[in-house]
Image (cartoon, rainbow over all chains, first blue to last red; front, side):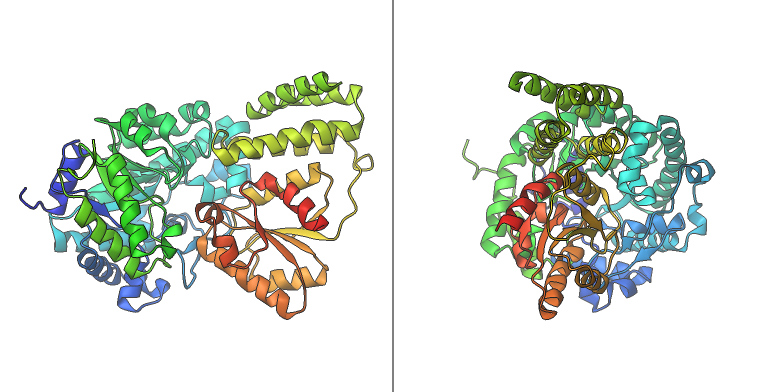
Length: 348
Length: 213
């Protein structure tokens, strides 16, 4: 089979056909800083650093995606929250910006054009698009309106809000949806190929299905319909098998799935409807040997690769800073060795 | 009595999972009329909370159900059972904290479960730094620390807490929980914790074992 560009490879698998090989999305954020010998704070302070980091990682690992994600709390920064940088992990959100119900009533969505942090991300996307054109997909994440409140107000208070104050919950969703649509569409306009709609709270690990249908599902349907490009819905390690048909109904094309998932059952449920993105365990990956990497990559390709509709990635949407280069190279090597279609090494 | 308790347990489990505050309260009020306070807490509420925690660990119950069950029970304890009636156990000082992160959900479930089981747990809060945690642990003569984390780098800092306590000559048992530990079953050993909880409601059984041991 003729070698495809990364974008061709991804588009083919998204149409549930077999490309030349399984696409590889190593979703790097902080590893770019390592490549450039910078601290994480310094790395994210200039779009040019992120561009250089992403391009080096693309080449080094023969990756099939540019990941325009800086850090989740970049959005909290836009809402006026604090960002706490660490030396060895993703910048964390500081104390919640919503501290009482009245704060929700007064909340207004921030303007993308007025947030220096968001503008840095947009600039990175523009520069990356100039470099890769239409050969490599640029994935730009945005927190779903339904999951953003975890950092806006704290997980405990948010769960209480969902159950006990439905009107206020709807008010918060309305504000968050406006922000999400503006933010995602700005990233698409800057050159992103697709939005990674991060929605861990919708996972059945976090809320039961009946509640999801009344909340996260309704929010996703309304929001995704207003975006000017395709989406991948990511549950950041949470389970989603019982929700597959409902997720497909939101209009998304891809689901990021968990290492906890029953992969053959999920593949059956998603066949022809949703492309699977996952599900390597990023936390455990720190201690993998090259043999572990090969065995685990082979296993997930065996379970999810046939017929396309599968992209190899981690299960959380971010490779931890502590994962060594050797392991990442072994993962890349394994997908280049065992991910070539047709997957005729798989016993029928 | 056994069959009545089993029936109460089933109904309480179902009402808690539906987050039906009215039904939960009605059931517990009824049970309190028939049984002693100790029986209601130890043979009804506590095992049902453990059951919900176990179901969360196996993926059949969602985190929101686990958390809200704890909240409903916490509210009941405050409104139905005056603190003077509750028999707290005698035990060495225990504290809970969220190390570096601000995600307090797991810690709140731990605190609720421990209170239901009759343990008094000192609250060291969230976003606490290694040095401050070590200082408060020493100042309060804490013997068991229940630490919750969300982020992987925070998990690594548990090792610093343990090392600094040892340097100070304190043999404090550290029990850890949170997402990084669930996704890497060996991480708790890597950071020199004494034990790990799969679910926040495991804290009760773990503490019982630690204190016996």
